[in-house]
Amino acid sequence: MRTKPPHKPTPEDRKQVEILSGLGIPQDQICRLIGGGISEKTLRKWYAQELADGVPKANSQTVSLPPM
Image (cartoon, rainbow, N blue to C red; front, side):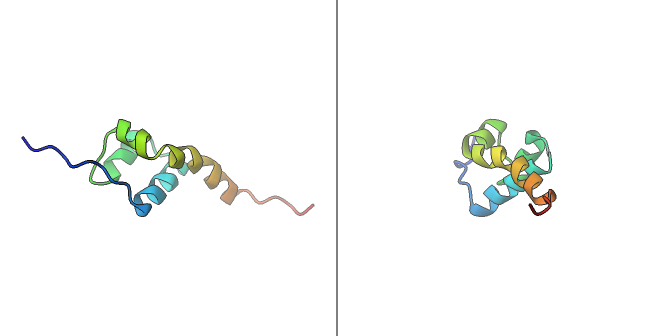
């Protein structure tokens, strides 16, 4: 039985995870879209920062504060 090669994140994958996370897409669905399908454990291992930054970055782009 052949095993999958180790996952290697690309800059495009990182950006996609950040955007999808920011949109509130569940992690199990993000996993299906990255690198031909990865596990949630792999997602959290390689993309922890992107998962953490997704929502705050998305929110900062949708909120405009009035000038002070």
